[in-house]
Every structure is written in structure tokens, then in C-alpha cells.
Length: 369
Image (cartoon, rainbow, N blue to C red):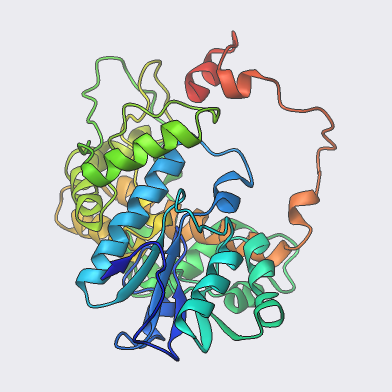
């Protein structure tokens, strides 16, 4: 069952609290694997601290909250006891730490299990919980990524330059994606030179999957409109997938209609075309609705089935096991302090048009708008 807000009394005294964050919406989450479905309590919470620590786009907040609510229903259907706090619940503590403390007191829980968050800021906070809450907190590795922190550190050690290309090749070898033994498919690791064709206005433009908001999403949209009216961006139209099922349909649509030309035009821009042949799947992978390796295997299979050329498959897979993994590795390697580095010695604030798109610079106006 999904319970929200917390109510007095429980039949699971001594349980542990399994905290699931808003970008950890995967049934294969490591914290869930380390939990006892028959005893432990899954806690999910919409809290103001996480929704406001930086200005978020209205659509981002709506996507995360709606996907969280749908995932809570998915977990409950799979037999988990889920305690879910909505943003406007009367007793909402306003922070993850506060909600964990409230759940610990309510359930008489003995400890907390959480998968490592994707931000150093939040990991630092979680590391204070054992002392603040006087309880055991088990922060387990996020196994949804290919390279662990230790693996990336070992790769980076002693290198004068941390080149993504060389890291990417190691990830190709590790996964076996588009490999023929020890050699890359087609004889080249990187086919980016083939991916710079200019787009034409008469190209057939596929569109990402558009999902009609259901009742849960409708309620979230009303919430965001009321509580985050001053946030930047527009809320409507809202057509993103917020369930695992619909995210997989979005993946299928990309592979069928857009992947064959993704490589050719991945760097192209056309006025009035927001997506061209891009997948618009990153937020589904980042939130946990799609497994990145599952996406890569589907793209790889499209190549072997003759549905997509090698430059398209390789170019797309490189974004996931190359850039996505590499940037995560760099972030954790350099933190803390990485966000304060200022290599180019910039001192001025971003101009207002970065939020309004009101500028004569055509590329910026189109991209921001």
C-alpha cells in the first residue's frame, strides 16, 4: 500500500527505512536489493528543499514529482510498503533529513538504507544523518552506472590528460558493445567525422513520443502551477512519459523513426526544430525509468538488424557509455571544490536573456526558447 501522509501506528516495528530519491525510480535500485520487502518501509518524499535549492524549470519539477508518484504505485503493486509524502502534506518537514527523521520515529525503525545520490551536496548531508538521527545509515553504491568511483579513479591515476575518447574505448571493451573480439565494429572506435551533415528544411522530422497526462500527472501539473508559479519556463504542453512502460515506448519510437538518421544530423540545428533526430531519452535514463545499458543494447541490435547505420549506433552509444559515464566520473573525481573552479576567470552574471531568450543571437534565442 501507499500511505501518505504518515499516520499513527504501524505493524512493522523494527523495520528499516529505504529512502528512494527522485532520480532513483528503478526497481533494480541497489537500496531495494539490500532491503527486506516483507519488513522494510520504502520512503519517498516531495520536499521543498530539493525543489528549490536551485531554480528548476517548471516541467522538470512536474516530471520528477509525477514520475515519483507513479513509481510509488509501481512499488506498492510489487508488494512493497510505501510511505509517500506529498509537497503540500500538512506535516511535511520540508527536507529529506526531516522526512527520514519523521519516518524513523513513526515506524520505530532501526536504520536507513539509501542508494548514493548523484550530487555531492546531498551525499554530504546523508553522511551527517548517523549522528543527527542517532541511527545506522547504510549508503550503498549506485550500481546503475558502468564505472564505479574506484574504477574511474584507477583509470585517471597518472594520466596527464583525462581524454574521454580513451575512457570510452575502455567502456566499449568492458561492455562488448559494437565489438568484434578486441577490435571495434567497422575498424574505427569513433565515427564522429561522419556525423556532421547539415540539415535541410525539407527533411522528414520525426517527433518524440507524446503521452497524454493521466489523473496523477494532472494533479501534479496543478500543484506546480500553484506552488512554483514564479519558476522559469512554461508548464504546458506537458507530454513526457512518467512511467516505465511509456518510457520504453519512447525508446521504441526513437529507434524505429529517428535512430537511422541520428548520426548524420546529431550536430545539426534548424530554426523551429527542437529535436531533429535526437532521442529525448536522457531524462528517462537519469530518473531511472530506462536502464542505460538496455538502451545501448537496443541501439546496437538495430545496427546488427540492418535498421540503422554504424555511425548512428556508435554515435548514440558513445553519448551514454562515453560522455555520460565520463562526466559522472570527472564530477566525483574532482569534488569537493569542482563547482568553485573558474578556469576562464568569469566574473559577470549570465545576462537575463538566458532565462527569457530575448536576444538577437539566433542560435541562443532558438536553443533557450
